[in-house]
Amino acid sequence: MKSSHKTEDFKLDLPRRPRRLRRTDSLRRMAQETFVRVEDLIAPLIVKESGEKEPVGSMPGLYRLSIEDLVRECCELAELGVPAVAIFPNMDASLKDALGSEAGNPDTLTLRAVRALKKEVPQLSVITDVALDPYTSHGHDGVLNEDGSYVMNDETVARLCQMALLQAEAGVDIVAPSDMMDGRVGAIRSALDEAGHIDTAIMAYSAKFASAYYGPYREAVGSASAAGTTLLGKETYQMNPANRREAIMDALMDQDEGADFVMVKPAGAYLDIIRELRDAAEVPVAAYQVSGEYAQIHAAAKLGWLDYEKTRDESLLAIKRAGADVILSYFAKEVAAKLNG
Ligand code: PBG
Image (cartoon, rainbow, N blue to C red):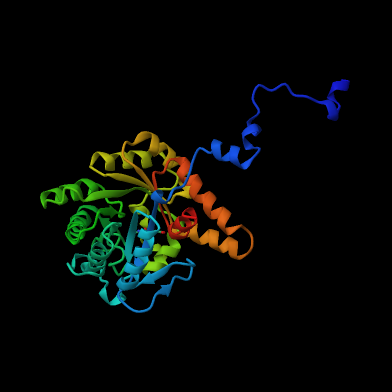
């Protein structure tokens, strides 16, 4: 070793030293490329028929809310500057049947919730799910064939159009088909336009993967059966987690059919899809940080294995950095409160 390689007078001749901009907090702030803003956050909320708010076991901090409590919660979210909520119904088991008939009831829970929200908190955008799973006894997102071995595509799309129309009539700002049937975005767009709902937007769950991360949500809305106890899984309509090209293709089809937003779901394990779709699509890209992503951060923090706030914030920042324009997240409210200082 040459004497100049002694530790004390060792000098690298570097044209760039990236650590210069990491030295102080103010320098790090100036160099920061990505920010999560309150405007980026959409809060998913679960509505139920009546009674006290009910905690969801695997999702600490999330409750099933009566319409009255939902309105209260949404006032707080609007106050914090959160631009939108996505509402999902927890239906009484007595209202479920094989066809999901309750989805066609013009006075069903979701529609009453939308009317109440548009009346009481009109500045907040409301997004409703278009899918049959909260209403079907088997928990599938559509109508099954005779022997229960397949979810019928076109028959289901007809039902989804009917649902989307009812939601538009109730005053919802954005309908969000989460079913993954082929051709449903175009069909819903035509149905809405024909009825004069030209300004009702569509947020398409475009790259929705058949994911294990949905488990806690199925407990929250009570649609667990399709996840495990029936022979038919959701992988005959949701995407194979192994597929990247197919995800981009399916999302671009939704864009061509008239989707105003395309969505990737789940988010954290699919950051490559978010990035690639951001580069390929023209419309805003939404990412859904799903129930299991929320639950795993809570669980690890509870065990003392991860720092709750830091992991939460990093998970959202990573989704934003990957290219998401908006993020549906069960952390929305607490993060908005933190960002408001
Ligand atoms: C189904 C639907 C699912 C979620 C929202 N809508 C899951 C499923 O396919 O069973 C999951 C949301 C979450 O996990 O947070 N229409």
